[in-house]
Length: 256
Image (tube, rainbow, N blue to C red; front, side, top):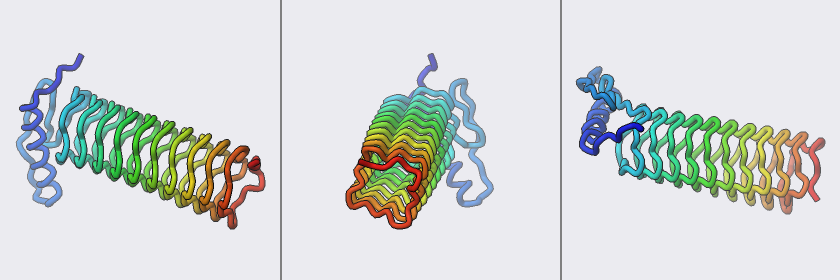
């Protein structure tokens, strides 16, 4: 089992990393002096906590931009309001973590476990969430525009009024997810599983739903203007007051 880094050592490393980020962002051409540890490495000031046990830690309101947390255990950690933009979090365990209002812009979260995590209002625009586990996660009001969620599992996730504009969701599992009032303009949902998904009032203009399964989905008051839904399954879907202007659904299995 990986030994957990001490709070004192972690604070020292985070402070050094913040200096490195500031120097890099200001174009000063400076780097803080590298520090070495058997368990935590700091290369040129950049924080490297690969595979470290940070579970249940208070990491809120920190600057961890571009840090390396690949495979780290951050389960049930408090990471609210923390800057993790451009960070490497692929294969990390973030189960049950508090990421309220966190900045994960362009972060790498591929294959990360975010099940039951709270990501309300988080900035995840442009993030890589390929094959990520987001089962029962709370993503309400988050910004996931232009993110990559191909193959992600979002079963039961709360995505109320989330921004998924231009997002890649091909083959994602959104069964029983709540996307009421969500913005999915131009999103790619080819082959996605939207069984029993709540899309009431969602903005689905120009969305690609080809081969998607919308069996039992609630599309009441949704806007599907210009959407493509060839070969999509719409049997059992609620299309009450749905705007289908210029939508292509000729080969789709109809609702009932």
